[in-house]
Image 1 (cartoon, protein in one colour):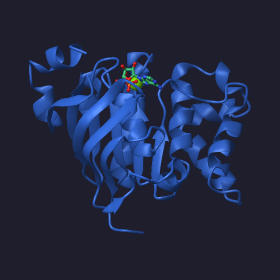
Image 2 (image 1 turned 90 degrees about the vertical axis):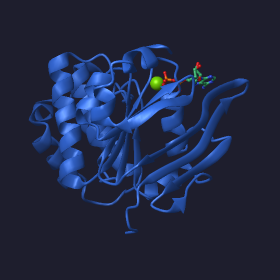
Image 3 (image 1 turned 180 degrees about the vertical axis):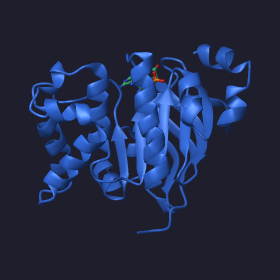
Length: 240
Ligand SMILES: Nc1ncnc2c1ncn2[C@@H]1O[C@H](COP(=O)(O)OP(=O)(O)O)[C@@H](O)[C@H]1O
Ligand SMILES: [Mg+2]
């Protein structure tokens, strides 16, 4: 396993035809920390995350993972290097059961044995999923779906985890539970986590560092505590 030197992004740009969604973004995620990417709807958060995992092409800039330039690698090659991406909007196979969804995530990289052990670990972490293991994912509550998403994203024990708006549409008590879990993943497994959120306060409570995107550009960055204490932050991030 290579040394963890973190994820580094320099001068990243993402374009969709005439639309420039990400403009010259540079940031660094230190190993074993949580970095929050904040910004209003349309600020470019998901595009930035997709460029990191390879789902959106970078039209300029450089992405380095543990010292290796991954800018031109396919999503699959990035996943093999330990990068996992949970997309926004709770993407699950809704007609498939909880266990089938976990199985698909497992089979993405590994068709061998060992699935039972990892599935058992998921049910240990989220006991309420045990009774739902054969329930179609579309019939779960939003919080339970987010638990399946997180479990699927973690199934290969990635070293880097990208989470796109994990709090979206969830009740506050569930958000607390989900973020408590995210924090424990970082602390116990030393997973480097980058998460994006529209709700700055929630993300900054667990993050170590963060930045604010506005129209595709970083307009603020720093330690999470300093960002959380900054009274002008909400104006910056609500500005779109
Ligand atoms: N596939 C796409 N094709 C064209 N424009 C897109 C596409 N995805 C996102 N955009 C545009 O890029 C900008 C940033 O979007 P996005 O990265 O989804 O922001 P956020 O996740 O912060 O809401 C928006 O103007 C959005 O309309
Ligand atoms: Mg988004």
